[in-house]
Amino acid sequence: MSRIRLLPETVASQVAAGEVVERPASVVKELVENSIDAGARKIDILIRRGGISLMRVIDDGCGMDRDDTLLSLERHATSKIRSVSDLEAIGTLGFRGEALPSIASVSRFRLTTREPDAVAGTEIVVNGGKIDIVRDGGEAPGTQVEVRSLFYNVPARRKFLRAENTESRNIEHQLHLQAIGHAQVAFTFVRDERVVFQLPATAALTDRIRDLYGNELLAQLVPLNGVGSTQIRISGLIGQAGLSRQTRAQQLVFVNGRAIESPLITAAVREGYHTALMKGQYPVTFLFLEVDPGGVDVNVPEESHRELPQLESGRGGSPNRPQTQVRPRPIEVNRPYQEATPQQQFQIIGVLNKLYVLMENADGLVLVDQHAAHERILFEELRRRMEEQGVPSQKLLITQTFELPPRDADWIEQNMSILQKMGIGIESFGPNTFKIDSLPGFLNVTDGAQFMRKVIDDLKSASDRSSPLRLGEDMIAKTVCRHAVKANDPLRYLEVEKLIQDLLECDLPYCCPHGRPTMIQISNAELERKFGRKV
Image (tube, rainbow, N blue to C red; front, side):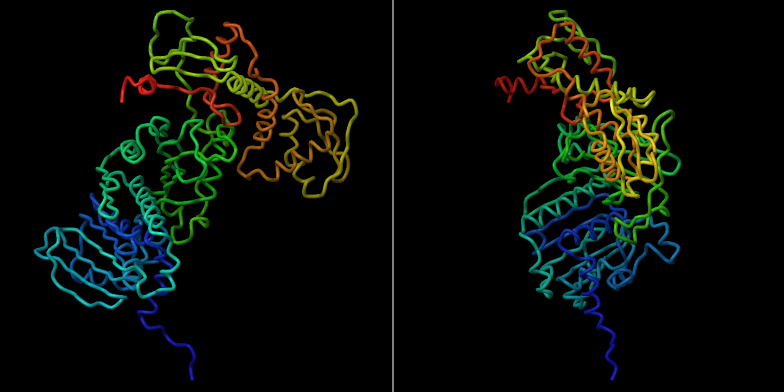
């Protein structure tokens, strides 16, 4: 007797549901993406008890006729692809045709839909994958999907759901992604009869971010206006130096409108923020990448995406350096007690605790950390010298030789020219053996061989896409801390003035090489609130 049998359709749908429906947030994601693909301009989402009791998604999209409505509940029924070749150029968010039947198989499911010009719509009620009711519906044009009692018939899956608050937060996060990725769509989210947010449709990403996160965050973001190459276009907003989070929760990336998580892009973003973030911190990004759909395989997990086209390097610069640099406008430093100066101009008013330079501008009070500021100045000067002519080196009194394992020796051979540019005088001295006769002049190293082993470890742990010069930057960042102006070092007025001028001429004046801020702005409005002059 044959032991292999075809699964009943209901069981097969529940197995498929395990791949599509992990938790309430994945249900909301699938339904909202269907609404966006249907051309909706307004989407309303309502949930109760973290989505476990109820999820309702209403849109004003194109709707469906009765035949398509019934067909949409069949597995692998979709309007978005027709052939294998279509998989290589998917321009929609959904395409597999599995979401609705999978959701309907593990819930009490109701779908009503109506085309704009239709006299009546269609209503279908499904319980646990079995169609109970098909009848005319009188809802407004568009589609409404109601999902109740999620996993009521799959108790093993239901017990793995988290607390209601956790599930609600997951849904809200998913809706944030959809709202940011599709600012042209209006979104309303209601949780347990309370309106969480109501976002109008907008053509500008900045308006959507302001509505979700407020003016304070928006003011700390820098626009990217379509930088890239013929193969890839990058737009969006990224955080200024000093703006960071302890997690990647606000490091958002979209490829062709689809929110993704990609180790490749995460590493590239981290590379771009090198020396602009403190250790353990993550940047805030709202990045939008537009590429040929054939260059991204959305039919596999994000980690397996084919490599995105590489950005062209900027003229005269390293391909690994950020292509968009934010430089301040020229700022004049004025002497104390002079007449008020135009906005973007500073007036030095004193030094606090022999550490913080106090300045006034049109927006309020600015505090500059003199140690962090001097670190940034020294760092950029040494980095520029390294890139242009190499770091000055100092001969060792005694030449040192050391032997390495074959793989480590190979690393040295590959990066020999970079090491020499960093001021390390190193050359081969036999099989897997090297000789060091000089080191960077700004370093205080007693054991050259031990130092080189540390450099090799850093090289091996660096990303393949990282510039080898980053090793030199790390060395410089650690060194300038010892040579920069310290707290309690008294500075004369002319020295303070020169410090501020040099800082403002830096490529990245807003943070030290370790990612700490060099300056902090306290606005007039904040000062007035502190003193009770404004509510």
